[in-house]
Amino acid sequence: MADLPVHTIVFEILTRVPAKDVGRSKSVCKQWYALLSTQDFVRIHCSRSLVSSNQRVLLIDDLTCSVHPIIFQSNDYGPSSIVTFPFHHQNNDVSILSHLNGLLCVCLNHTYELLLWNPTTTAFKHLSTPDSHGFYINNLDAIGLYVDADDDYKVLHIKRRSGVLGVYVYSREVDSWRNIPFITRQEYLSPHFNWSAGTFCGGTLYFTVCECWIGGTNVVICFDVNSEQFKEISFPPVPSTGMVQGVLVNVKNELHMFASTGMFEMTIDLWTLQGDYWIKVLSCPPIPPISLSLWCDITHYVTNGNWFVMTKLGKLFTIEMDMKPFECFYPVTWFRGFKGAVFVETIVSPSI
Image (cartoon, rainbow, N blue to C red; front, side, top):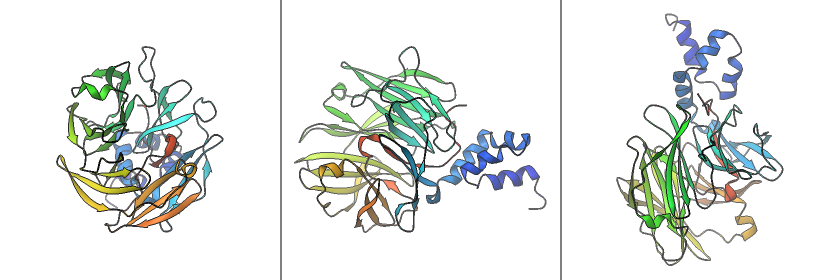
């Protein structure tokens, strides 16, 4: 170590410190500021930050926005800290649409504008433009956040407007939107199909596309982020006698789906994608009955062989699962109303 340049020693040490400490370290001197602002430093720091101790839960209600650490030993929330939105909003009307490496893609519901936001550094970037790009309509549009082979963070925006579908990609590197072709079945343009947010895994964005009635069509749309080509793969072979919902999760760079089916009693199976085919990992016991008012306020996490059903106040109940331990928490359903997200504290910037 004594033979290493000071620059290298500082780099190796500071890529291992928490994101907020990196921000404070930038004020030490001009040399440190320049070093900690390089893309190489941000990329390596991000890769070393993707651990359970850096996971946070962001929760939004009508009055506050709060961030909670996840206490890995007790599998519950830690003390909250209040977050002030750095951008203009009305009564916390902010929906979280996608998240990746500490960045959140959010929508301001009163203006429909899209933003990229890092809640750890408070930096944000408006994505809307005068030519109508970067505006999101709930229940019609779909969003996916990803990073390509050139380390450029991008947003894929699928827009359905009066039977016309447009697909657009925003690049952080060039700070602009462009249109790309979408080649698949035109029937998916119908508002009868519900598109999930995109889940990024192994160089591909995955979307579930589910028809909004019993026995309807359910598929998975895949977007290769480097070739920018779309393809369709099958849904796991789940019963179609009730409502069907598939929630995609990237676990250690392997794509999993929690596929729930039923009407009054829901059953949920965990599947993993191998090639273009789904392999069932386990079947979970039925979820205990939950009142509608409470159901609208919960999300689910899976870690270390357990499944936790939680409200914003903490853990509701636990389902034991026979599966390998995970080193982090993974949300297995979206937060109801897009009012929360699990994210990792990083220094990744929403703009260059």
